[in-house]
Length: 144
Image 1 (tube, rainbow, N blue to C red):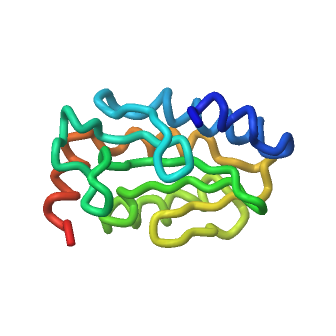
Image 2: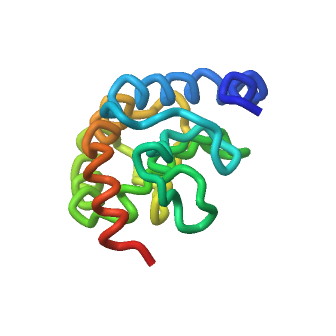
């Protein structure tokens, strides 16, 4: 399945929010990341041409930001917030400036269940906060 097919198969209630989120990330992510299907979702990755070692789990391109339409929420998987305490702290501090609801977040996953209240400006800013070089350097420095 490719990204277009993924979007076509999303439940109609998630389709607009997913598309807006994906476009927001794509419009703000620094140069060098590539969009592809990875781990069952559209994901921006560091291509193997740039980082030949790839992801330690499966050897594929190094994932950075993925977006998935789940049963009960829209999920953004941002590997940088999992690995970078400063970026994680920035998100926690900025979130209330954009949203009145509590941040629903796991280690790398930000979840939105109210699709009328997705903070696209914040998502765009988050997507642009880390370059390919910074992400690879951080990944290498904290690789298991």
